[in-house]
Length: 321
Image 1 (cartoon, rainbow, N blue to C red):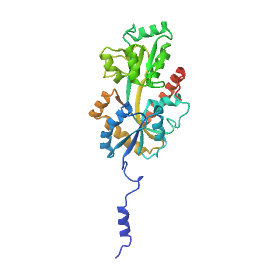
Image 2: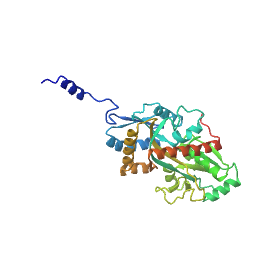
Image 3: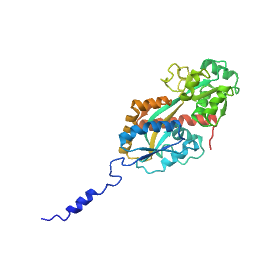
Image 4: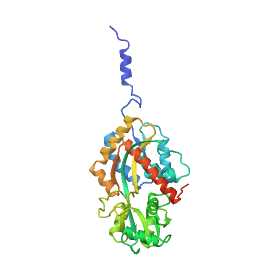
């Protein structure tokens, strides 16, 4: 007996399945980074890449698209196909601050993305020039209130988390200080060390060497919990500013409507990767503490952050275009 369809069936079996039917992923995944090489977002992505490649069976192509406070990379991701091959190393700026800071965005931080997981955060240290005659947060607040508009604080640029951490502090303590923006973290810290500015909410990784050398005096940390990098430094919440939290956080998102099975695959690969000791060590050395959330929790967290920073941006009057 002849089977006329057998050869046809065998031929079909040898044809590669379509992308949608194939096991995900079957090719490299592009991860857009909203800042330049060497930035915290870039360091995190590169620390994750080897472990995620091992778990996914495909490499992460790191694509740095800096500019416009992270908006360029965010827009590219938002406009990419929802197939799991374009991701964003999201930041507090792209997902929570910029929507209030910029008069026009070509994406919406909630409607145009699918949250996958929070990865970690990087707290700031409240540091002052040692010549400022205070040793505690309480004393600094008293000094600022006695000299409204006299004390100043530097930042790495208007609208950055370093800037808005200072604005949040001013709002919560009812103090008035002058904001002095610089072109970057290096310039702002140099100004603080030289005495050009009095205060800065500096990234922890940048501040620790300067604290230990005595060039800066640390008063507190901006995270809701103490950092293992400098556990003796109390949080602002511990020191009386209940509810104060200003950390630069990072997570992974994809375009809107990313299928649930792809979200689950990426979430698991990321959580497994950040759980590796070598990955944790690389992040720790960069001043980033691992903190993860599932997609739903990450979405809720983003919403609360949008609301919080909208109030701070409004109070500060900060605009970035």
